[in-house]
Length: 87
Ligand SMILES: [Zn+2]
Ligand SMILES: [Zn+2]
Image 1 (cartoon, protein in one colour):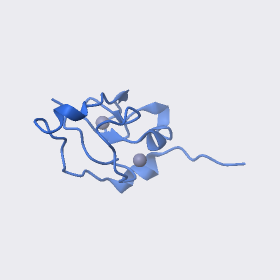
Image 2 (spheres, protein in one colour; image 1 turned 180 degrees about the horizontal axis):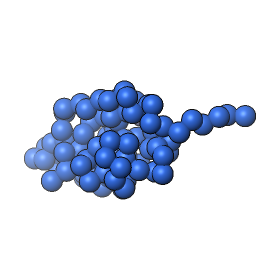
Image 3 (cartoon, helix red, strand yellow; image 1 turned 90 degrees about the horizontal axis):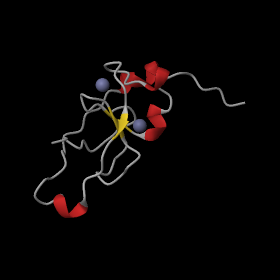
C-alpha cells in the first residue's frame, strides 16, 4: 500500500490523497506537479527514477487506510531543478 505522503518533498506544500496531479517515483518520493515540471528529464531528483501520477485514494477508504502524516522535506531538491527563465 502506498504511504500517500502529505506534502511535496521539494516545496513542502500540502498534497491531498485525492489530488491526481501528484507525482511519485518507485520509492514514493512525492512531488507536486509544479516541482516535477522542473526536474531534469522529468525524473526523480533523488533516485533518477521515472515519475508517475500517484493514484488517488478514495475518501471512503481513508478512515480505515489513512494517508501518512509523516512529512518528508528536502529543500536541496531546488538545486536540481532546471533553471526556467521567464522572458
Ligand atoms: Zn512542490
Ligand atoms: Zn525517487
